[in-house]
Image 1 (tube, rainbow, N blue to C red):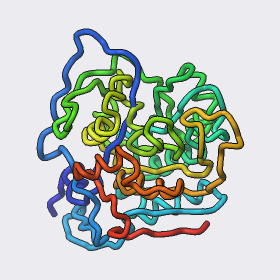
Image 2: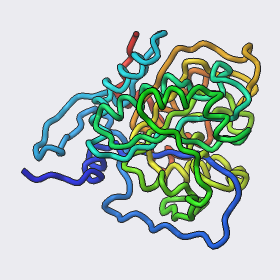
Image 3: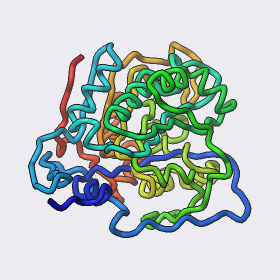
Length: 332
């Protein structure tokens, strides 16, 4: 029975994803990370006919799974679990021994998650538990907040407690680990300074919160990837295309959007509970463009209304037309 490699399998299954965000200042004499080998580089978008060929076990067995799942309710851990089950289960994305990084949006240390600027800790903690349950050897959670310190933001957000309770680790992103890497498919930028461990991880799970943003309209999955790089100010020079370029380099296996409490105005930091809407929704997909497109509808927008979502779709990074996808709606 021939066994395909992990990344080759993910490429054929159409689940190798992307994701990042931005951080601090450049280093001198930065090491250049090699471009990934073509065999391992990038996955095709999620098949729209929802028939996924599973070759991990040396056979071709068609399994019907959703391309995108939407769970609604008030039991947050169960919403997360059910949304991942609809996509084929965490075991489809995380294999035994994987080194996993989960990237939430830990925006600042100004407010707790109730203010809608930071990913809900229950969402993050549940994903840690699921990844460990799928056999991950290590699950780290990290972000590079632009307000306050990482240490204080991790605690204030409630994410550190949730992650450690679930058996994961919080990691403060070490500036010495930010290294220059090529962006082979980038249209505007061809290299940037990324957090090396995120590029090296066996799997990255992208966990943004859906919220208003004064510059880009919304912060969603692709925008959340800015927390994985340095020199975020320079990304703003052509922000929509540059976010899409970043997404072409770091592809999460899953994007899970926290839309439990959505910040409808005055993002990205918020600070007024009156700006927060209780949407009670979790959106999950291996397709970052599809996830972002669906999340946009919660703000009465379409994916095409968000510049970086349209740019990513134009680059072939995912499906912006939700009517082409099998979407599973779940009530919890």
